[in-house]
View 1 (cartoon, one colour):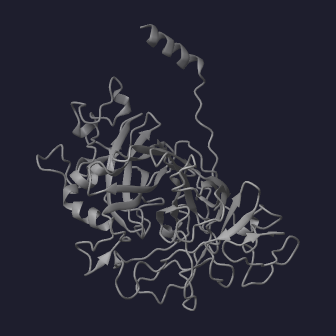
View 2 (tube, one colour):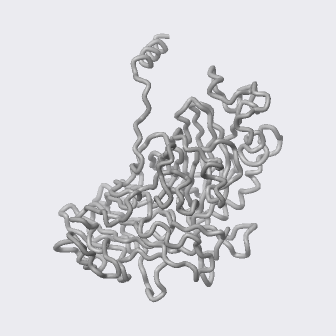
View 3 (cartoon, rainbow, N blue to C red):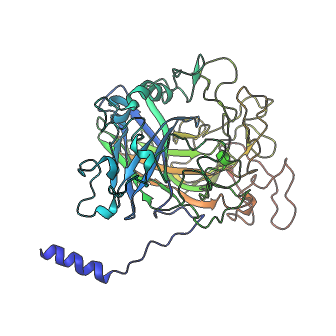
Length: 510
């Protein structure tokens, strides 16, 4: 009783204010959309890598979260609804989903009269009203949780089980049943580890729709998506066999309930609403700073497991195709945007020496063309997919320094994809701006200990042009402001000097 009295006193003393949010600055406050930027699930071993995440309701008002799984080619594979009572929390294990076909079972008051499935405790006002004759709230949830018929109301397993083969194959880069012959929705690493990313949207009712639906039926005035910022959550990648785990907050993407984003503004789901900003969700950053240790395999180093960068990217591509030619096929493998380019990656050491990497071949305009022009035979893309884990020290992501920090300008221009088998209908959308998310994962003592944290956001995609960079003068290093190799006019214009990969840069970077 003392604990309860103390808690009651604290609740009286603490002012009832919500966290102050700021659009165009991604911060951990309640949001309308959550992003899990990357996941891994080992389908071969129950002790292998797995991904966990949670969805939480920061409000007393019940709501529905729409969970969508996407492959690393940014094709949605499955989506389902999660009903949340006030202040509810639901936790997920992707191994349970991919291996056993299990997802949390939730239900609103109309289908949970005993308050056993999604309990609200002693606070019925935190649930939908079971006494409403027509159950006006969340009517779509009567038969649409978690997917198809409510498993609580039918003795058979939910229809989600029918989709197991689709998500297992789709997220491991194998041909997906139900699509055309040899059609895939993701890259094949050959290790039977499922990969992809997840979006979680606040919606006004249960639905069968995906966020990439055309015609304004998901976002906008007549859509199911809600602009109320009330969701929050976290995520973890764990590996029992290796004995490590890493975690962070989910990416919290706020909506502007006042409709402040206008047509032409970059928004998080902008490619799916034709750049009209009807999703009203703030975009992510375009340019990043991330610490690194290039010390994998060095027994003398504390972080002897090195550093991985988990990088989520927006291809800015909308395609009507449900699948694409699989990895290893002949022809236009993958979607029209594949592979994604980046503008510039520069590694620094602790003595402020700098080396440009991920740029072995000069591309006219200083990079930023995706897919690369056909006359570029061996272009370098360190982060070619919409989501990936990239190890520092492998391939072209290999700075000449043991440790320091990395500057990542991940902007690019989505060029003409009309010649591809599955072209984008949004070619040129948002010009040279491209949102992204970067997470750093450092491993110590042969990988027994890991730490993961988000990179530092230098520039938001709310900027109208990445020439607004201010890292060195009015530019972002040497090639950012160049247009076709011509110096940008005006004070602080770029000298358009390009440096070979791994060459230590001396002199003015701008």
